[in-house]
Figure 1 (cartoon, rainbow, N blue to C red):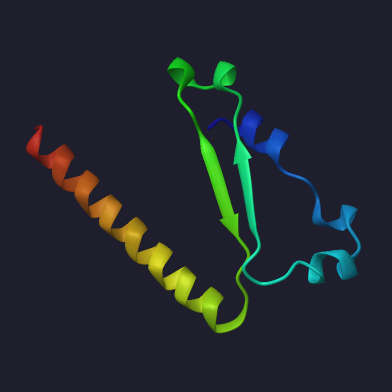
Figure 2 (cartoon, rainbow, N blue to C red; figure 1 turned 45 degrees about the horizontal axis):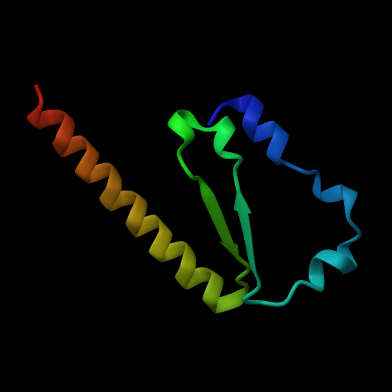
Amino acid sequence: MTAETISDQQEPAEKYPPELLNAIPNGTIFAYNLDEDKTPGGMKVRWKIRVATGPEATRTDARQAEAIREALTWLRKQQASRR
């Protein structure tokens, strides 16, 4: 993803009143699909974002951190085996 694409996707939080942002219930899922014409090789790209707060958010953060750690470890091993 390029910086240009990232800036196209972001909206300033100040644009919305705090009451509106606080009204999003825990567990809400937002799904975004990128236009296949704008992705490499017409690859389908989809983001699913689940709203989590409190203890659930803490557990989700830990799961994501572990998944990222595993992915980086795997990538490092793959790069080392190709040398």
